[in-house]
Image (cartoon, rainbow over all chains, first blue to last red; front, side, top):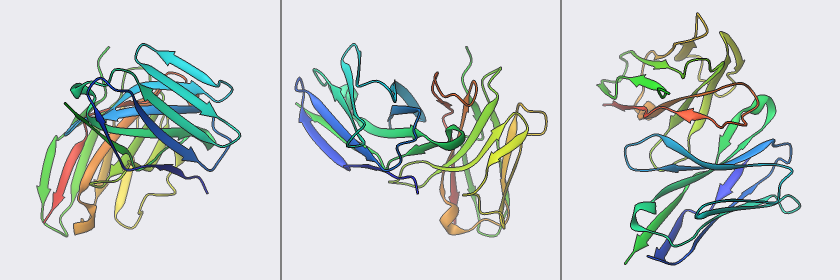
Length: 110
Length: 115
């Protein structure tokens, strides 16, 4: 079956880079996504990458996709306190059903 | 562009009662999704509509949950009767089509507490 796994927690110092990792089991994905969820809010789309790409950069965000290892990462440069949130990795599968991991809680400390 | 609207924002009910949630997707979005997010977990897809037809409802507990999207626009999700383990945030999302290229837009969710 389809599965998406993420590490549950990451703590970084303000100004450092954060790297959030995700692995998935099904290689039939079309798109892979990173969503951000702040307390009491819905999910906000941060960025996505098409499955035939290796990398995508969008301002402070860099997404790397290793199709061979089925590994996706999100790098946030110059992490700020406002980046503290839960980050969800998602993949679209059959009929573009969007499957999520359990989320990585990013804590940014001074 | 208006976002995905959901109501109510919060709901507290007793177990065995019924409850309904409403979702209005982004105008023109053909695909609509309902997700259940239990505290500390990622969202789990309950049901996916394409226009007014069901694409996937394999994770929907059909003995107590039902959903409809009669005119291919608004959707309602109902739970009857509710159980304690149904306490969660129910998220509605929509996308332009099945392609997913423009991503999936989520509403703010309905937080359900069953006591």
